[in-house]
Image 1: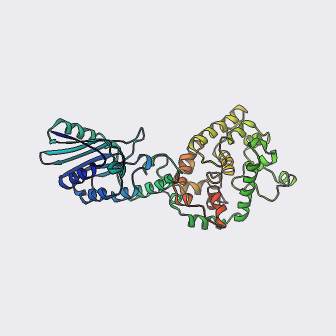
Image 2 (image 1 turned 90 degrees about the horizontal axis):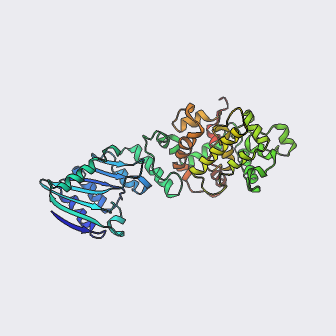
Image 3 (image 1 turned 180 degrees about the horizontal axis):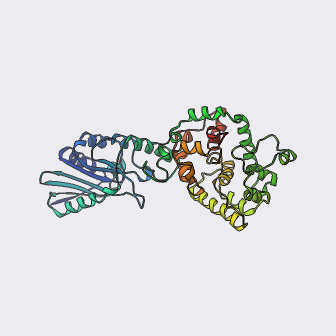
Length: 405
């Protein structure tokens, strides 16, 4: 048996030869690129016994994933616990085997730019080390998935979102129970032009007046350090609980504060808003005004939101309609108020059953697919549509509102 130490500079030539000359190829690496060696690899795809690239961290090229569609014995892998992180290359021809084991991924860095160290092992296929490598490779079988067009398209959308520092840290595959279907839904595939055109139709309310309302709400948030610093009528307006007589008396009659989810019928919620409950205000203060909203921000908001009802000994604890109304008003670029008038259509657009929506799964069912979508990740346009882009998620209500629901 012969063992040689390789670095990133010597890896490409050796790997190129092994792919070209051997009859059987097995690879399991955390990340892959779509470069010259990928071309060589795909030229020899009939030799694949098992070639697997990880997707954790969006470090694998979506172009490479696209090339694997329908390729026999080609897979992707994503670990839900920890990350898929091996760098194993195994090649066989007759009684001869060669392997590369070490730190180098199948990437530009691993094959040229980085400081890497790998062992190149040559010997008989009967050598114990090759049995150990084979055993390790076989152990990854439960993580492997074949690459379909649906998977590749979904990964590309999520990859583009991650490049813009939006969306989740790791890709969600189509078979994921929490968000997988939503990531291949019609709303997740919508582009900006379609979104803007459809939002402006607004058959039930006046598009420009909706925009004017959101503009007014944003000015209110900008004028106060905390939600509880606003007047009671302003809080009611933001919460969607402001009555007609009150809004006229307070000089807020220019807007229909019930748009984007009227919450006046939610008695316990309306009561806490009327009392300017500081615990409820503190919950909303968990959501930053301008910085990206994280899952951790949302989780802490939900915890404090529900605790406000419990501490107030309310008859009913607030759920997703009231919780997301406040979220959509504070951050219309991130949240949509899910309520009885839009829930069915929104659920259909995101491929989940409307009866299953709850506050605890709102992020997975609604926000994760939205943040992977082309319309959400489109660059902020110039001109009249720039403000629509600022309020784009809340304005989904114009598309999915059903007056008769």
